[in-house]
Amino acid sequence: MNRILTIAFSFLFASLIFVSCNKPASTETVAPATLDTVSDKIVFIDIDTLISKYNLYIDKKSELEAQSKTAETALAGKIEAFQKRVAKFQQELAQIQQNAANIAPVDLKKMEEKYGQQQQNLAKEEESLMKQRDNAALDLDKKLQETQKDLQKKIDDYLAKIAEEKGYHFVLMKGAGGGVMFGKKTLDITDATLKQLNEDYASNKTKE
Image (cartoon, rainbow, N blue to C red; front, side):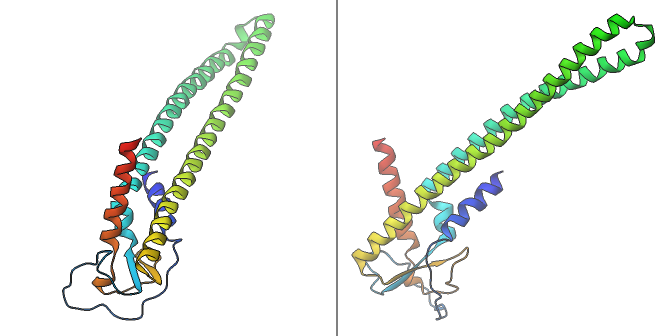
């Protein structure tokens, strides 16, 4: 389940618009860019780094994983109890079948009605458990989509704001699904972007 969530979150960021960078990386050691020092009109972010270190993503992922684990544990307990009741029902039914020759017809008829009703009840309970499982999966998927939209909006809004303030023509993406294979370190605004996103997130958490 954790791997599925990680893949789902990672796929979210691959939707950012990107353009391939045709120039190879410089071999000289240079300091990473800050939002104030970059004068180029094209910059890029390392999306893998942004994903792994963005505190909002980390918190939301942990929250969803905890909710998923809680739901799975609760459902597993119900399924285990149900399986025990099914096993008991099968044992009792087997004993009746073995002793059927020694049971009066009238009593056998009553037992058939009793266990027939129990079988129907167990079937309904099984259907209910499967429905609970499906609903839990749908609920988790809904929360995941809502979280994805929230994360994407915050990143998109921030990058659009920075692009306008700094006059960037393009903010490219390096990493999962991105089009930048190499890029000058001076054009990498990942750290500066991450720093500001985490500061904004911390500030908003304090206000809540």
